[in-house]
Amino acid sequence: MLCSARASEAEGEAPLLATVGLDQRQQDKITSPVNSDRNDECKECIACEAEIAEENPVQHFAFADLEENEQELTTFKTKIPKIQKLD
Image 1 (tube, one colour):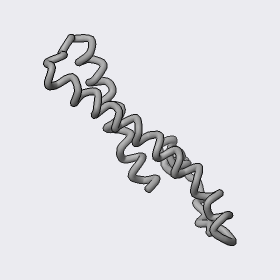
Image 2 (image 1 turned 120 degrees about the vertical axis):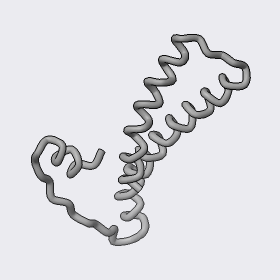
Image 3 (image 1 turned 90 degrees about the vertical axis):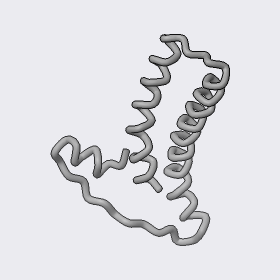
Image 4 (image 1 turned 180 degrees about the vertical axis):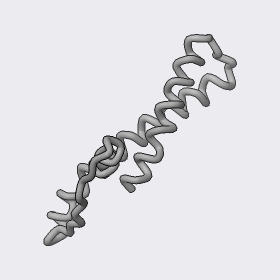
């Protein structure tokens, strides 16, 4: 989550600073960690969707699996807006 969003949730504030790398290599050093974190979050969501899609056709609906899927869905519903903010 972005620092400013965390600060706002805690009823605080955080100044934001826009940066631009001096050259493409420096720009990549700035953006790569953020892009990597976003991609990791997206991979988790995609893996969860794939798992659910795999279980649906074979009617694999044990209560424990459904409960786990529901928890993951709730988690991902909160992660998607955070990923979109990173974009």
